[in-house]
Image (cartoon, rainbow, N blue to C red):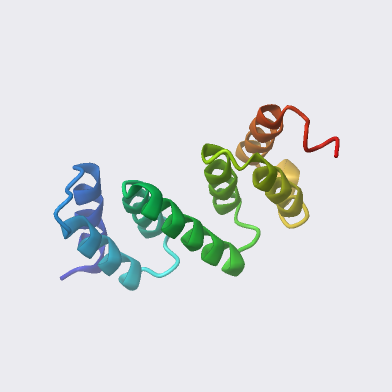
Length: 130
C-alpha cells in the first residue's frame, strides 16, 4: 500500500466522525509511517479531542511530548495555550506564554501574538500584575 494513501484514509475517516475504531487504527498507522508529520499529528489531535476528559489528558501529554522535541514550534505552543484556556487554567496559559516567548521569535508569528493577546485578555491582567 502506498504510504500517502494511509494518510488519506486516516483523514477521510476522521472527517466522517467514524467511531468504530477504524479512524484510530489508520491514524496510528499514519503516525508510525510519518513520524513528525504535521498532518498525521493533527489527525491524532482530532481523535483525542473527541474523547472528552480522557482525550484531554492524552492530548495534553502528546502536546507536551512534542514540545519537548520541538520547543520553538509555534503551532504546538498555541495548541497548549489554547488547551489551558479551554480548561480554565489561565494561570498555566499565562505562564506558558511567558516561557514560550523565551524560545520562539515573538514577532515571527501573527497567530502566536493573537494567542498571547487572547490569553492575557481572558486573564484580565490578574496574573500579570502578581
